[in-house]
Image 1 (cartoon, rainbow, N blue to C red):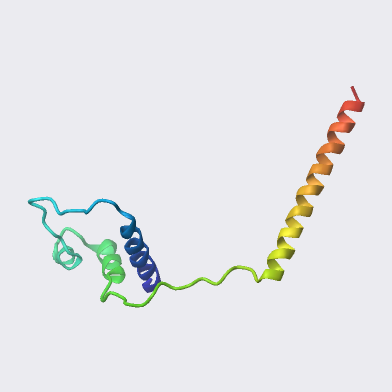
Image 2 (tube, one colour):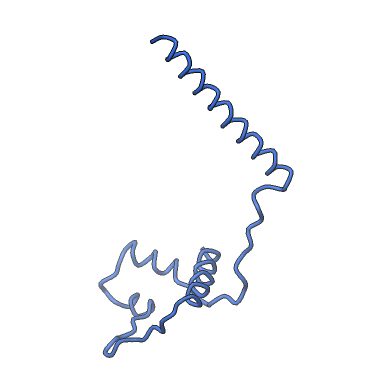
Length: 105
């Protein structure tokens, strides 16, 4: 779960850099933190337990994780070749179907 929060934190920070407007807090707004919600009697049972388990205890200063590419260059070339061959085979079957369909008429 920590990795999910780190990813979302970094994703939202990068997205915020693209925004052209500056968000402002409306007058009269009240901040409600998760700790305050957990002290309410309104939330109980599983909702309370899930909130407690998923609550972020400390922010992370680490960079977002890097996902290695799914294929090395040779494997990617092989995959794309198989894909091209499959497409070509389907096109041949389509041509054969339409040719046999036209001969029957």
